[in-house]
Length: 360
Length: 78
Image (cartoon, rainbow over the protein chains, first blue to last red):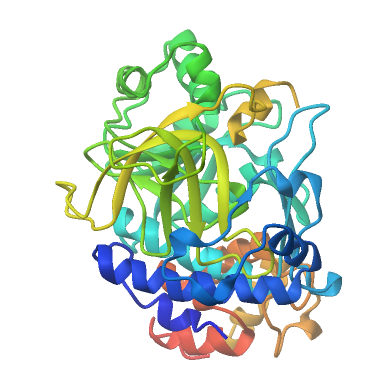
């Protein structure tokens, strides 16, 4: 059995390369064995690939699943009655949706881990929270989208929460004014998805000419750049626009996937995405899936020690990226730091905020 | 209202459940106390006792009993 309590005692960016490799290898090997025993389709995949788990020296050698497997197959390592929550990841009309099955234990671990990681940036004192999205996202409590799960996960850092958009995705100007009046002079935590923020917040503030003072705010946003990439809007332009319309300058992106909720990769004050000790990034060469060197672009594999109820601990994504360095970011956080370059060509359009863009 | 009444009432309001279901309740044991319900329960408790809980305590708050223990940290005796 994996001792997660002990695992979570470590501060999120505390381990150097060798210690972290030993830590991840131990946990991920155990997880692989657990899923092999508990998930028949996963066992079959390992058999088909002739995987031998006896001679594994590093987690880098462990077999990974392409992330789209979760669209094609029902993959879970728990009994049906143990399912507490099902997370669906974004898929657009006509595309298959991934389904991630969570039991109570995994769901709890996700929350605890997210709290640890984000706490490293925000502290453990909760701030008035402005959610740059619509409350309609959380309507169905048993089955929510990755967007809903994200909002809920980050809500733990907020108090006196307000949704900036109404059910019709319109900016609630009056409510916003009241909220800001009430919390005048206080630090405010803002959360949302990149494309939604651009489309429904920035653009509306620009159109209406209402420029609230959020210079004391801190914004965390995620969900991917695919849609904004297609509009040729860079991270720099995004941040610049936010500064213009509401004066906010503390803005952090994060990279993460619904298939590995909890272990997100936060952007530091130097603009680098960081892997915490609970997860890691490997870059693989598209031709033979061998490991790329630092600075070399390739496919991103994400590994996470959290997925217990489903075999999603080692996943090959459809994103391309590059590792910028390890253990030596000027922000002093240990672990790898990296950059996401975008989706591989021919991959389906997907990303939390992108799905809405497609009209769902 | 005593602190115990306030505490029970926070469950009734936050989770929208009947009073007789509250004592001994555990997180995820009923559909109402899911992760969505949890956040509104926390908000009701904070309002009732005029406190603000730390993020770690919100995560650790896994049952009726555990909540009583956590609230001691905030000088609230149930």
